Image 1 (spheres, rainbow, N blue to C red):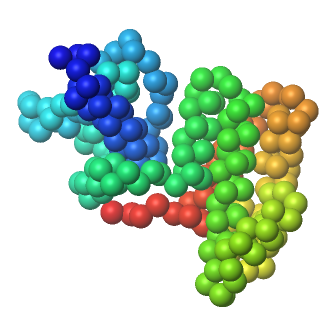
Image 2: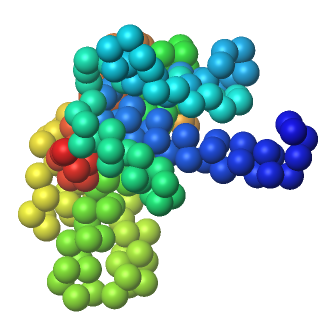
Length: 214
């Protein structure tokens, strides 16, 4: 059966379904994603007394849902998102990627991904605000392209009434500059710098583009 067309199609479909589910649950719970590998059986484990609801695809990671941290509503919604093919928003996916990178010791990628998450959140807020004011999407996209860098996006966001929480000074010194040195200067940030950069990015994303709280 393992080489039948139906089984292969099921495996591919489950792979994408499970990935969406895992990202939503990780974003709500703060649990690390970990790396894809084929060294362990993968599954969803939901303990109910001494029994588990279990599903095991190949080449996937494992989600353990225990006493914490997901609510029933969050788990149910994550399952619905996965079944509808609704991916976690990009800015939240980049936060997960940054956390994963730091856990794996890749501090350069951690700060680069964190900064990308903040930029996407700032740009999305600006775009949404301008759309509400009646401007066309094509015009908005061109305008955002002309905004030079994260710091200017931050300034535009606050001018439009957004509250990214992190000050322009902290954004510049502890996120934008650290990212630029990592991305363009080839410098590896310290663990402390990477942690602070990730925390600032997470604060901005959660302030401007919060996930639904269920």
